Length: 78
Image: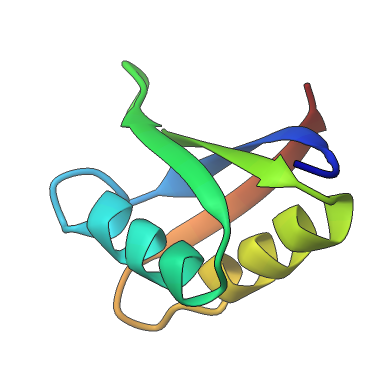
């Protein structure tokens, strides 16, 4: 696969609301390979495999969700 691995850390009301399932659905529609897991501090970690642009597009989509309250999406190179 072309690209790298990027970590998105999503903060807000993102646990216990179907957020990970929603992210996996969004990623599947965009043919992205991702993994999502809850973190102990209440945030969600999403690993995106691909290009930086893929991670940025997914982050933008997540930031603009109106069904779940997202406060911040941080992108880190892995």
